[in-house]
Image (cartoon, rainbow over all chains, first blue to last red; front, side, top):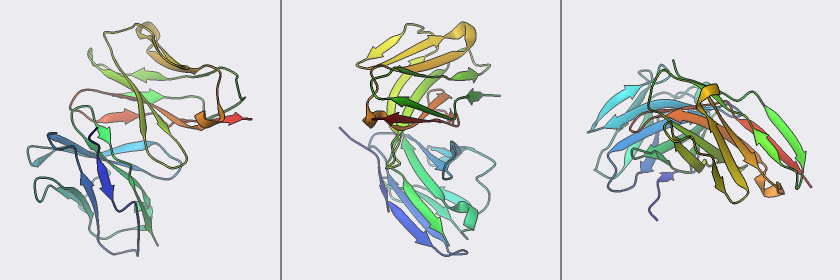
Amino acid sequence: EPEVTQTPSHQVTQMGQEVILRCVPISNHLYFYWYRQILGQKVEFLVSFYNNEISEKSEIFDDQFSVERPDGSNFTLKIRSTKLEDSAMYFCASGEWQYFGPGTRLTVT
Amino acid sequence: AQKVTQAQTEISVVEKEDVTLDCVYETRDTTYYLFWYKQPPSGELVFLIRRNSFDEQNEISGRYSWNFQKSTSSFNFTITASQVVDSAVYFCALGNRDDKIIFGKGTRLHILP
């Protein structure tokens, strides 16, 4: 059964550094999403992506964040200058029914 | 605005007991979908069920069952004969096809041996 994969599983970075979180969605899917879960809290929507552009974004998704589908297979989330409060689990989801990847735990020190 | 409320923050039961996790939702949409996910300590989100707003039939899958009541905007989840492996955080969620999912705050379930 096809599944969504995410790399890395855990990323540690210093405050102010740029990070790129990678997702490989299921191959024939057209809708992609990123969600964030701060430790111990609920899962929150960040952004949805369809037809090579953002279709919706939350208030969390400010100018520090960007998404792209650089090569038709990967779907990336970039955080330009990380802050301590960006430490969270980031989930990618793929497809109209949102199959979730295993997540990337981002730790900002 | 759409909202999902899971009033039970944490529940502890002894193994083999039945346990029900409550979920109440708010939406103005006439068509919507309700979800339950399990998040074990390893952190991934495990999909359990998706239910269409037009289908109010109860669903049973092994030891798991779901009770959807549109009249009270509730979508409760029952685990029968709980096991230690059921220990996890359970999220109820609301969404629509090709649209974002709104999650509740989750219920942390401890099954004690």
